Length: 173
View 1 (spheres, rainbow, N blue to C red):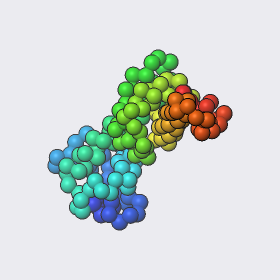
View 2 (cartoon, rainbow, N blue to C red; view 1 turned 90 degrees about the vertical axis):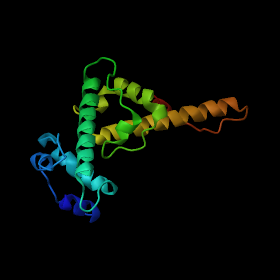
View 3 (cartoon, rainbow, N blue to C red; view 1 turned 30 degrees about the vertical axis):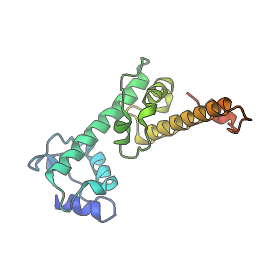
View 4 (tube, rainbow, N blue to C red; view 1 turned 90 degrees about the horizontal axis):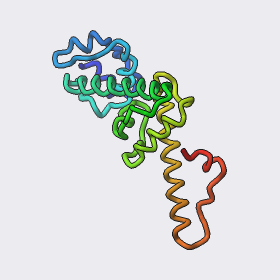
């Protein structure tokens, strides 16, 4: 716990390198998986404000729970895009933003994220990566903003000021 708290406070890369077994040995912590050890380290590095110095068991359990959910979500996104069926992931914006390396997902765009997963299978690995999910979030958010701008320009009765490019229009889901 002291090492996790120190690692998150020093601004450097995580040096704790705690194993799943070590995390599970902390009283009040369970469910850490060896397959997610590198993701736990990334979480510690990216979420310094989530830990005291020393860290508490509750803070470590919250990390384990969050990381496990994010890793499951990445696997689901990768599977959904590969199976040819409609997306069953139903990820919320909050769940997408909980993936280390992903930010900016908006609740209002959740249906568009699902549509993107269905329509852009080749953009995701199995499991999906945080970079692929961030690219989706950015693309969807930009498309929704562009559509809103086009709609506003059309409705206001004055000359269009959106100046959409062909690339932007082709990027709309």
